[in-house]
Image (cartoon, rainbow, N blue to C red; front, side, top):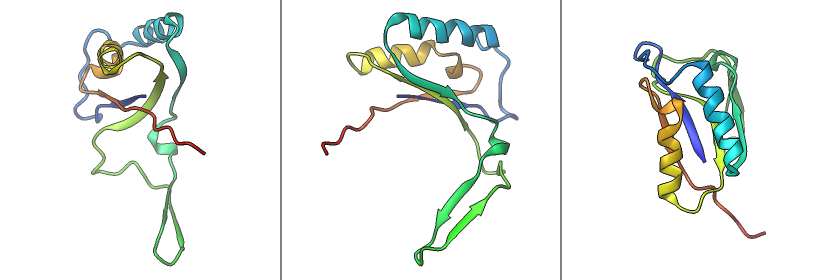
Length: 114
């Protein structure tokens, strides 16, 4: 899974390769390559709702984000099917989200037997 984190607004860099058109090209390339499994962009952080449950089972809901301590913001993800970590890292490096102060975290999807 490629987890795409955008840079904090105050640290974001305007660099070549991060335009909307660059994202469209990357998305089309991933899908046309045959490795695409799933993926979505996430709505703006201001639409997020956070749920926490304390030890007593009481639910607390927060909708007042984003928070000052938030640095990178998860903006979307791709699930890709590639043969190994090196291939996943290559695709992550090609992603526009890895530029301009952003990052792409590569993590395997856990598989559990039921």
